[in-house]
Length: 246
Image 1 (tube, rainbow, N blue to C red):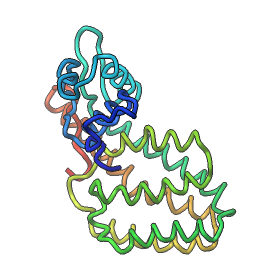
Image 2: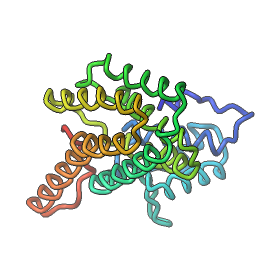
Image 3: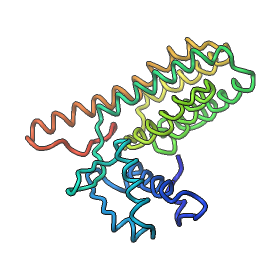
Image 4: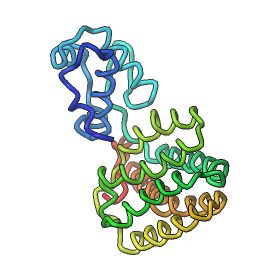
């Protein structure tokens, strides 16, 4: 995902509420707006030069997605990062990608295989230890997203692109991928290339599950447990959410 805020100033031919939504979503998932940071309608009106109506419509959409919290007559603020919920979102993504692999990979055309293998090769030519960055994650998202797109299931496409990616981009590890995990990722990608060539949908799903488990789900759950222990020890409230690798 690119820097959505770069689309400002708002262009009159596009729906203003969609521009405001995209810009605010980018501010949140990039971390420029921090968890629990208050959002004031009047500040956004002044910054974007638009009326209150598209601001509220955009905020309502963000609230429906769980990216902001709204308490009537009290506050509107950026939602904290729930690391356990993030792990569950990854599990949902894995289930969808695995289903799409089983149903669509056996019917792939030569062009579809070649396109996905090109994405695999693109990852293999990068420093996999650095693919935990937001830019690196976009390469992974493109690979998994294409598998979902190839299954032509619009509901799954909408969930993955419109909800899960927005949330999961918030938890970008602060540290590079460990050497052992990077080696495992490289081996998995090399095997994925072979499985695609064989059009082995079941094999693709069976490869994806442990890859996501080791690279994302387990680190998120470990970070969630660490955060919970920290809250218990301090007797305070739940922190905004340390990211895996922090």
